[in-house]
Amino acid sequence: MEKNVYNDNIIYVIGHKNNDTDSVCAAIAYAYFKNKLNLNNNFNIKYVATRPSDINLETQFILDYFDIKAPIQLKDAKGKKLILVDHNQSAQMVDGVEIENIVEILDHHNVNFSSGTAIQFHVEPLGSTSTIIAKMYFDSNILLKKGIAGILLGAILSDTVIFKSPITTDIDKDIAKKLAKIAGVKNIESFGIDAFKAKSCWGNLTTLEIINTDYKEYDVKSFRFAITQVETVDPSDLETRKNDILLKMKFIKDDKKLNCIIVMVTDIIKEGCLMFALADSVDLIEKTFGEKLINNQMYLKGVLSRKKQVVPPLTEYLDKNLN
Image (cartoon, rainbow, N blue to C red; front, top):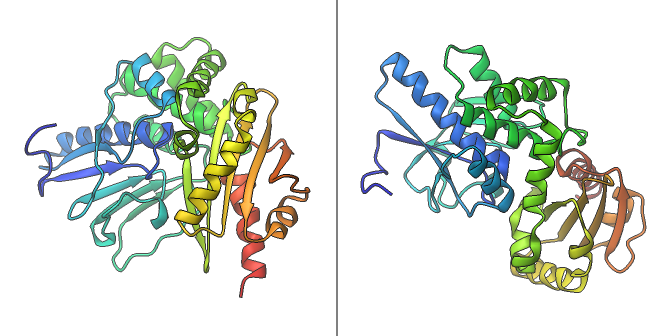
C-alpha cells in the first residue's frame, strides 16, 4: 500500500463489513467510474476502492478470472470520507465510520439510514448494486473495459443466484447479457455455476470462518439479530457440520448479545434452504416462516434470498409484536 494513500483528497468506496462479491466488485467498478468521470471534468479528487474484510473464494475466483486486483483493505474509517456501496445500515458499516463523512450511498437494499446533512443517495430495487453501476456506465460516455464488465457480471450472478433468486429483475438479466458480451463470457449460466463451485469449497475453512463469510446484523427496535447466508451447489459437507454450526452460532449469539441468529444453507441447484436458527423465542422463527423448528433447524423450499424472503418477514413480525 502506498505510504500516502490516506489523505484529504481521497474518497474511499467501500462495501459492507463482511465482504461478498457484489460489495467488492461494486467498490472496484464504482471507484473506476468516479475517477474517469472526474478526469473528464478536471476534478482533483481520487476515489479508492477498498474492502473492510477478507475476500471470499467466489469473489477471488471472479477477480482472478478477469485479472482484476482486489481492493486495499480498510479496517478503520475514522476521519475518512466514504462512498458506501451495497449497504446503508449502520450495523453493516466498516468500523470507525462517521456519518458526517459519508458523501454518497449506492445500494439495492431497503433504506435504513438517516443523516443530519443531505447526501447523494441512489437506491434501486434491482438484484444487485452492480446492476445499478453497469447501468451508469451504459448511460455515460465512459468506456466499460472487459475486466470491469466481467466482475460486474459475476457480482450480478452471485447476488441473483444465477437469476434464480426472487430479487432478480428483467433489468438484471438484460444488463448481464450486455456485460457478458463485453467480457467475452459465452455461457452465462456455466460461468455462474463455476463461481458458486469456487465458493462451495468449504473444506479448508473452519465453521466460524464459514459463518462469518456472509454475516450481517440487523436492528429492529430493541431486537438485534444476525443472518448468515451460505450458498452452495452441494450442501452435504455443511449438513455434516450441523452440531458445530449450532455450537458456533451459540457462541456468536452470546458474544454479540443477539436475540436471534440464523444460518441459511442455500442449495442453488435444488432451490431451497436448510435454516439453522437460535432465538430467544422459538415462536419468532416458527410463526415467521410457518414451519416447525426441529432440533434448531427447518427446511424452506424455494427460499433463496435473505434480502427478500427472510429479512422482510422477520422484520414484519418484530414490528407487530415488539412494544
